[in-house]
Image (cartoon, rainbow, N blue to C red; front, side):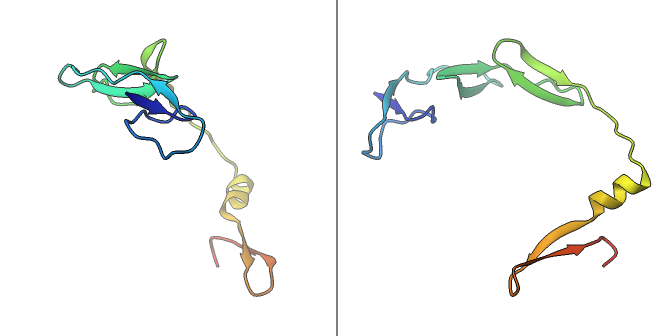
Length: 102
């Protein structure tokens, strides 16, 4: 018997705390090249990820979907803001601003 808590990957053991629910056993036969995935409280057998270059994401209802790559152009001012980092000086608990040039 398999058990899951809060949607965790099912296992045959629990830690003894409350909240465990019975879960289906994983499939025993997975075709070569396919992958087993636990999502949305059920097991899924994913076909091989496409070999075409790109950012691929698996959707339960749509299969493998290629994400569009977006190019974002930044101004010099926007880059300067992104290059600034805030850290906390542990001795004084004050925020210290560092830029990439420091």
